[in-house]
Image 1 (spheres, rainbow, N blue to C red):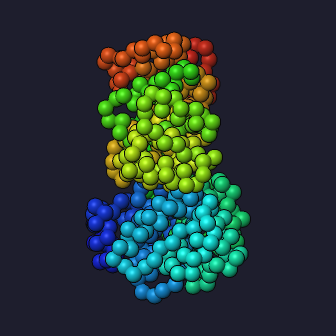
Image 2 (tube, helix red, strand yellow):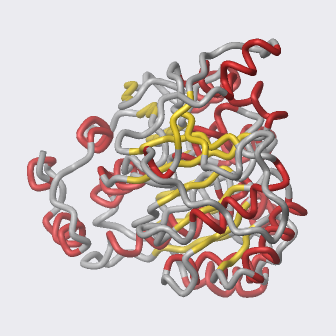
Image 3 (cartoon, rainbow, N blue to C red):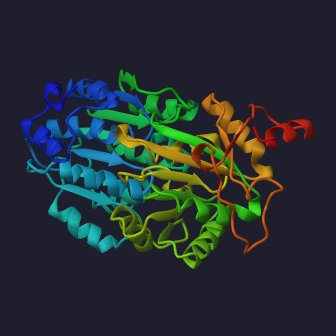
Length: 414
C-alpha cells in the first residue's frame, strides 16, 4: 500500500517520500488507519518493521494545527529516544512542529532552556522525564497522544513505577499508542492500565525472527572466537557488522584484539559515557568504522540502515535477546546475515533459542576453529574449500542436554 492511500496529510507523505519510502510496511498499513480514526492501539511488532512511522505519522497528522506539548513518546533507552526524535524531525520537515528529546546523562540546564522554547512532540526516557516533571519543567495537561515504545523493554529495565507516575500526570481524555515486541503478563497488565478499548495490530508472532535474515551457527572452541571473527571479517560483504558480547569486560577485550588486527571498530556498553556511546553510534552509522562491538544495551532501538551482519560472539542467555539482536539486520525488507558463535558450554543456550523460535539453526564448522580442532595461537587459519558460507554444515536437533553420544553426533561433519 502506498502512503498516499493512508489518508495522511500531503506534507507528511512528501517528507516520507523524500526519505525514499513509498510503500507502507505491514505494521504501518494496519496501525495508521486505526490511529487516524482516534483509536487506542496495542501493537505487537519486532524492531525493524517500521513501527516508529506506524505510531508517529498519524500522531503528526493529528498535531498539524495547534501548539504546545501535545504528544509524548516514552522510550526505554537513550539510544532509542535519540533515534525516534531524529526520525520524527525528518517526518515534520514540511510541518511547523517542534520535536524535543530528554534522556539521562546530559545537562539538566540545557534541557530546561530547550523546554522553555517549547515543543509539540517530546521523546523521553522515563527517568529523565520524571526528574523534569518533579521540577515543574514539563506540563502534560494538554497532552493529546501518549506513545509507549518497546513497553516490554521498559518493564524489563524496571520502569513500571515511573510509567505509573507519568500516566497519572496525563489527561484521561487522550489517545494512547502502545507498542511492544512481546506481550507477557506484565506488559498486558500495563496495557490494560494505559489503554481504552484498544484495537490490537500485529505483524509477526512472538519469537519469530525477521524475514530476510540468513542465520548460521559456528561451533567454535571458546579460545578461538576472536580469531574466527577476524577471519570472517576478511570476507567480501562484511561491510557493516554489529558484534554482541555478553559482558562489558568481554566487549573491551574484544575491541583490543580487533584493533590489534587492524579492524576499524567502535564499542558501546553501559560503562561508556553517553557522549562516547553516541559518538560510537555515529561513527558506525556514518561508516567511519565497519564494526560495532556492543553488549545488549544496543540490541533494541539501534536503528542503523544497511547493517549487513549481526554476530553473536556469545550465545545469548535469553532467547528473546537472540530475536532482538538478529533484528538489527534485514530491516525494512532488506537482506542480512546473523552468525552465532557456539562454544561447547553454550549448547544448552542455543537449544533454548531453537526451541523458542521454532526452528533448527544450520551449523557451519570452519576448519581449524571447531570443537577440539583449535589450532595453536599464531598459526595460519585454514581457509575452507567448498562449504556453505565458508564452512561445513553440521546437524543438530533441539533439546535440553546432550549425551556424549549426541555430542559426538553433533560434531560429526556431514
